Length: 104
Image 1: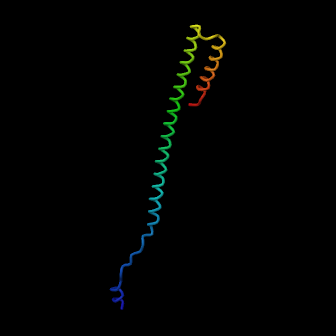
Image 2: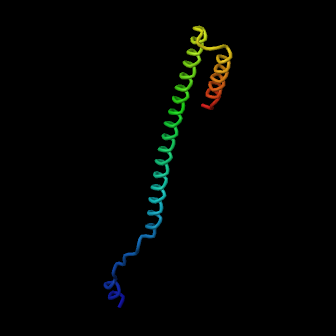
Image 3: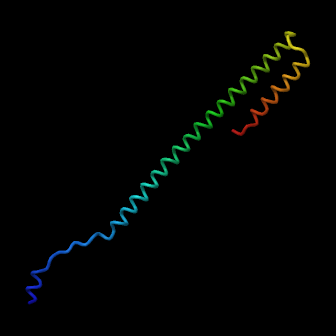
């Protein structure tokens, strides 16, 4: 009887108990990689934006300095009255100070 039972033994395949764990690890790693990529892209966009803002500030500063120089030359040439010169100079200096105060 014992010999008959041993001959009738069949192998039974059990599901792998680590399958769910493996897929969870794969999904977690994929989510982390996706987050890392999106974070890096966001940092790059912010860096480009800051660079653009700095170049805009420099351009505005140069334009205001050119206007101040032009106003000085017009005053020396006698094309602008003293009162108008003072008013425009005050306005240009105020605008220049506002631009230079902006955080970098």
